[in-house]
Amino acid sequence: MLPSQQLRYGSIASLIIGVSATIIAGFVERLGTIFDIAQSVLGLFSCPLLTCVFLAMFKAKTHQIIIIAIVSGLISGILVINSPLPSLLVAPATFVTSLFIALVVGKIFC
Image (cartoon, rainbow, N blue to C red; front, side, top):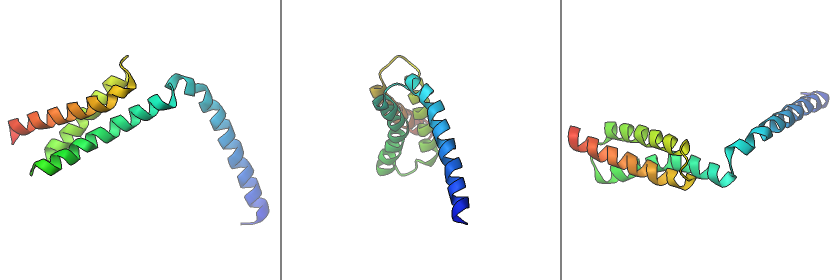
């Protein structure tokens, strides 16, 4: 690629990134603070995985149960995110829900 082509592609890429960042900046205020966003995202995905690790350490046959636990944890996390509860409660809600559902389903079907 010639330097003039690189310069042209770089200019176009810079323009696209700048316009995208300007448009997205208008929506950032609706998302809340960076702390709230980080707590919601980390709690939503890491705590069901923590449940998987916890169940894998203490139970032998948990393959189907883990899938049900992850889905139930994600659903409860989404409900907490969309409720007026603080974002700090996303992680405990997803962990407790996924662990409770896994243990109940494990007792019923295993």
